[in-house]
Image (tube, rainbow, N blue to C red; front, side, top):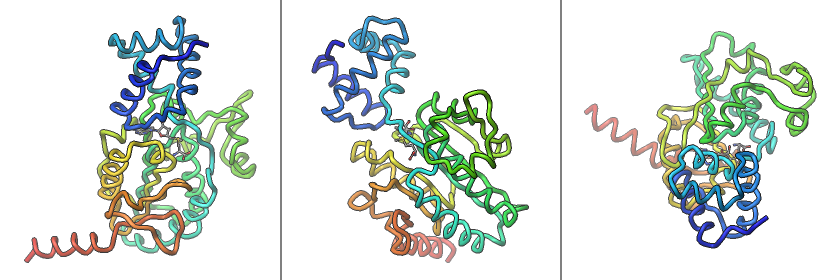
Length: 286
Ligand SMILES: C[S@@+](CC[C@H](N)C(=O)[O-])C[C@H]1O[C@@H](n2cnc3c(N)ncnc32)[C@H](O)[C@@H]1O
């Protein structure tokens, strides 16, 4: 494998930042080489350098493939477990009590990957199916990667993927075996809307009761992270909950969100902001 030149690596760093808001640290150079070599082999090209040269020359479709190949993509079902326990035992029950007049729940899995996170949420909601009968439950799952979203939409996972984090009772309750693969029930597939959204440049409007944005922030450039958290705060219902990854936090990045002291890893819209918005609304009415 030939090393990518320093100039080519800088080009890739700058491309990933411009297109996806991602910071590629210099320590990732070897990973970039390995992944682009694999992409070159798949595309019948001479090597990583050849891929980069063609992208530099304006090959748009190849640029999409290059970005896709370098995205942080690791994910699995019920990742970190605790957020799903919090959803199951605290967040969903309290939202159901607060929303009993509306009978409506909106959940957004931002940067969801190949679907394991969104289906984990759907499996948690399925545990509350009886109490949620007659409710409108909207789960939106988005990712920058069109290929990840395409796989997520099929709901089909190989043996290795279903062995990562998925409790056997959930596997047996919601999946059917299809050769070496497992496919999630049509019922859960229909429960989720999958869409391609690039969080570095786009947002999703709405007042979501729960937003999961997990294990992306740590890869983003600081300015992109700050802008994203502000947009996420706008998309969160005033009493909604934001769930971040186990090693992520909003501290030092935005004043719009604050940790929920009762629930580790859960973030809420800041009280001062809620108050300010409420006062603005009152002033507009008066
Ligand atoms: C490490 S995975 C985390 C997936 C899932 N949230 C989890 O915690 O398991 C990071 C995800 O962020 C997505 N991603 C990277 N940059 C993005 C961007 N600018 N906008 C939206 N998604 C992005 C990647 O495609 C990938 O699916």
